[in-house]
Length: 255
Image (cartoon, rainbow, N blue to C red):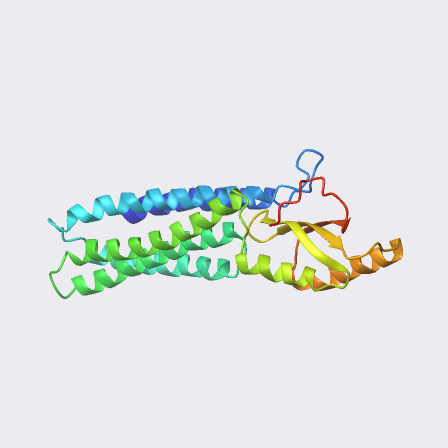
């Protein structure tokens, strides 16, 4: 029963994830100037919350069974478990190559189902030979706690992206070092790095030039910027050149 309810929740979540994932590729508009990529992120957030709620529900059902375990119908368990492992396993494999947070969270939904049905399969085989009904709630609790740990980790990352935190501290430092190493750039401040959906990152920065440069030289620096940042695969970049004696209109606070 726990697996059936959980699979129903997963079906609704995956369907919503597919719809929002498709909508997230809609082109940018005058109102949503960055596009709709965060619909995918919204789906990841909702899916993670559904997984947390579902896992808590399974735990509330399984833990009381430790005190009074019931012997299930082993042949029925075995047949359904084989079907569940095959179908969910194939789906999880197809989605395992996904890069977005939405795809990763959906993959955890499917992986949870695989582990759940695998637990049912193992228990059904064991119970065909021994009278140990307590194995059913024990394995349910074990795989639910494992999934819950990983979902909370993904949920934390999703919330950080919603709050526009730096997607990766080491990435920010690497970008800073690249910028400051470019000739004629004496200082970098107001360096802001955030992510639209966990995959497409946005970068803005003020670059202080060590000496007044011609328009041609500034164009050369722009080319250097483009080449230096190619490896970071940034979706959007915006830079502002400042002279060393120029007052920063944003009130230069080093970041």
